[in-house]
Image (cartoon, rainbow, N blue to C red):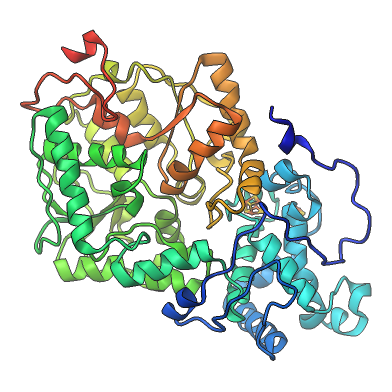
Length: 531
Ligand code: SF4
Ligand code: SF4
């Protein structure tokens, strides 16, 4: 193992945990949001500042704003008040956070991370705290606490692994989300979250790609597919009256290895003759609002639903994206939904009614494809993926938030001959986070990303050593963007790809020319070429 990251201070930290002082050391925090992005979203206190500055240029009444914001949220979110009140400090969650495992910093234990907020709650919102102050576990809200909140609430990927182990079901991610929301009220936000969100408002997607760029990118993909398969696929965009609106994360049409997943979707839709449309307005499935505030989450989510209404589709099909699904399944119905202007989703190919989507009216591509395979609608040649020895990373949001555990595995097992699971306590509901979710996928906090991703990478290393695994498949754009760096560092030789890339490789299309290369342009084995 590289020695640099193994220097974790294992001995008990000195001092009192209530001391909020933190050191903003390069590599472990994210830069502040540029004022132009704060302005573009209409958020408070746009200014030039950085976390390592002594003066954060907070508004003069910052304390009142935070306490009023906290009061409002305690009244609004019952879960927040419960989570502030019911922790018994049993410690069951303590070693379940990948950031604690990777950094050794006790304030990264979920119970302590929550306590950073709870101590302020206790001081200002409980009788004992108001009377006895620190004797009742309360802390005065100071500027140093604001900095401590920023440091630790932006060192949580909101993955919810800790909640799986808490006997009371306390979800520290919800506390982190409220913490970030409060920080946003005084203009303490990070650029890697707000710039994509601002771009999404400006052009429809996080990357700021204009509609003509979106169109060019999809047509380029169609050209490439024609070279690989000899088949020209359609690229319907903004088509009114299509049966289905397809929404994917923008990285799928822009970045690698996501792009191969896009090729897989396009092949699949052509092969089954799906009546669908892409949208240049809703050209983003990812929802960075989740990492900032409920309000921003709602605003970004609304774009997809407004576009579905405008195009007059029956229902929505969503691509391989993590946070799109968390927002959808946990919050959409009470934010923008229910989307009762849409129909209850039914597969036009198999007739399957997606009962689980009768409220959201949105089906995950893995559910859709698994149903096609199960119904015998696809011809697959798994030998075309024989160069891969595959393991599967359950992306936190689809796995823990919506229980999407079997469908991706079912697709992989049908599209590949060599599939190996990682150890049981690192997959499915207990999956370890990639270390970069919730807006931490940027390069300035690379050290913390590598530390936080260590437990995930360690499990991959295990199957790499035992089974020769060389591909880590997943269904989240942030995973696909950040796992390659994680693998390069902790498990060199393991590449990262999407489930629908594997599906696309294996898919035998009617009328295709003999395939000589996979979707990455790598040669197929002689047997697979002529299958
Ligand atoms: S939600 Fe995830 S990152 Fe946050 S404290 Fe819990 S385990 Fe750690
Ligand atoms: S497991 Fe739950 S109750 Fe126990 S310390 Fe953690 S948050 Fe508190």
